[in-house]
Length: 202
Image 1 (tube, rainbow, N blue to C red):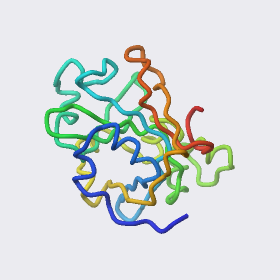
Image 2 (cartoon, one colour):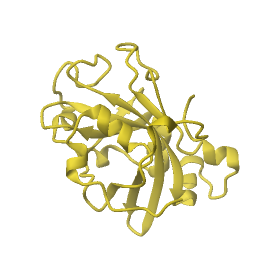
Image 3 (cartoon, rainbow, N blue to C red):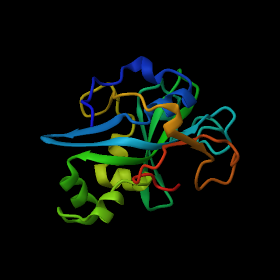
Image 4 (cartoon, helix red, strand yellow):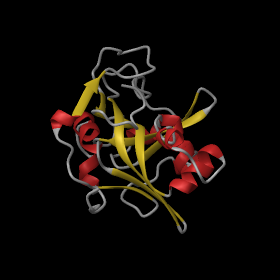
């Protein structure tokens, strides 16, 4: 794996949600929790554009739950869903737009034992469990131990951030419709790395 580069700057996030979504593929999500560092390569995302996307939390306007989505890009938007798990999103665009990118799957890079404890309550895991560690939105939050306290975190800070890395070539990125939604179902706004085993669903 190529050496990691610097943190993504604020201006990376203050762009169109589809552009940011595709360019997040291959970047490295990092959670510096005290002396514990958890990280994983982003291999699957979904874009949600509030103004035209009926599947977006922000489509019907600003609420207490989704207010972070309407901030300027570069914040973490965490929400609780189905009464079961948290989901992790990256806010994009200018203030007031209500756009965000859902992180759907990451390939664990560091802090894997800590992730395994968070997910499976054990340090040692087999190959199947490694692939299953963070290959879904709720699994990412459980592996990294993200919760409501992380909602609104500035991604240019020192706790949770995303590192730049070599750009994944377009021919290696697959675009498809999004998963588990009932509205705006035909939009091809899910992006993932072709043939990557850590993707949640082909």
